[in-house]
Length: 598
Ligand code: NDP
Image 1 (cartoon, helix red, strand yellow):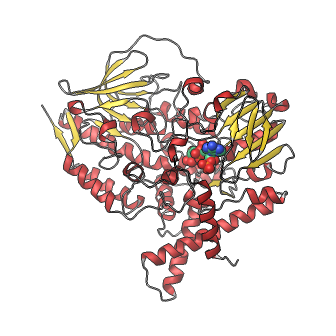
Image 2 (cartoon, rainbow, N blue to C red):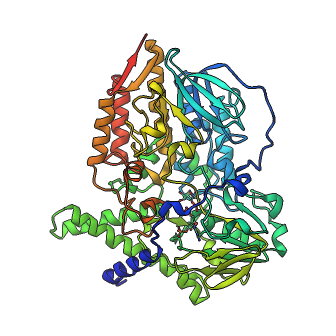
Image 3 (cartoon, protein in one colour):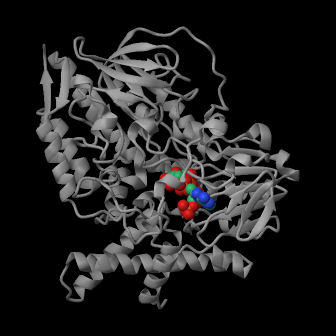
């Protein structure tokens, strides 16, 4: 394949420039006012209960994979008095809320589903559907006895450090004031739905909902894939063509009378090639296999060398192409420099994206639609998608792609949407418009955290997250943050960050309990030097200003400290971080933390 790399650079820039807008992240709307009910829990009835005023050793805020992984690791470390507080009606987090049809994870289940060996579960397929992931969340909770002490349908409203008593007080919307010696916060990076700031959005008189609160009462059907029979006579519009929309458009195209997909920027949609997992093969895996797979994936996905590619997916494919090109260039006598690595990355990326664009021509019958579905940016500028039914959906006569040439819908009115110069009458409008990223932590978590001397986390992090290891924040004793930023930052497989954080947090809590320490806190100096280390690292590809706008690059706006530090990772990469942190916690010194006994 001959690729005109120069022409691609120009095309990418033209397409990016079309989409740049001065309001950046401010273009989106919070679901408040008329839309506030969009945040209600459609899956579990809220049952009134008496407020709780008791004590626990460790409280975990958030019952998604963050809370579950940390809860499991705490239990494994012999710490039993653990309570998970969760806004939803069950465990699951993202997998509790996101029940849209077709929901699945396009990271391979063998590595995405944490604690597979500990729970004895074999994934049904290479990529599994959301109900199986949700069940796995429940399985972890059952295996590690996390249900008995959990509080569901409970939103934390404030977290305050009580210095005199050396514990946290957790206040909730149920009137609870729970005391916890330690708190870990796992409220997730993509938990707060946002709406597109399209003029007139509040005037739509038909039915509407966000994909993270799918209204099966309206559409019919269910999460397991039953047809949405109520849509058979409906004109449905969907705003957004990100990773969520790519998954729910095929079932919508199957069931709706007419489907109008309002596209601002196409996703890159590569082959998924799903297949069932063979139980006989699975039974041959040796104990410790998941750790080996996780390391293999992280190594290959971040450009390292391994004898074999165990996962073999789109994530490892692009990385291996880059690596092979570097090897080729060095073998041809070139010196290995950052510029050579960048060139290898660019060439591999162009090759990959040309293949992905060619797929549109090969699959989509209508020439114009195929052209409109082509993504003109580098693969990691936006969340790469992998799907085998998305592109064919456009071959159905009732599935209409309304491409807006980067502008988005012009207007919403009582009866529908105006886009690309035409008006579309709709009965139902679905917002696949994503989640808040880059707004303040307290806004996304829904509560503020008041630490030592009344300092608020929202103020301390006004100019961005500050931590050591992405876990400990100075001024906030006995508090842990569960995530990936400022730690391994392996975004291609978020759960491996969480399971590893769990091991770290459990080790710290256990050490505090064993030594009788009342408080553990990162020193200001240790936090500063970790931040300096992150700051010294070369700019990550995420945040690339040449990319088309999206949440990976602060919507194309200059990277302020909040955006930059919110996506920073250990400079030597995830594999080096996992090794570093393993040594750190096993040394028993817990360097940078101060344990204090009164
Ligand atoms: P995204 O933020 O990725 O996508 C939002 C979509 O809404 C984009 O296509 C965006 O267009 C569009 N949009 C926003 N405003 C407008 C407007 N005014 N007019 C028209 N279109 C508009 O959200 P998703 O829910 O799709 O995905 C969020 C994340 O969740 C993913 O990035 C991924 O990390 C995760 N996810 C993971 C999955 C998995 O398989 N593991 C599956 C699903 C989600 P534009 O691109 O132009 O901004």
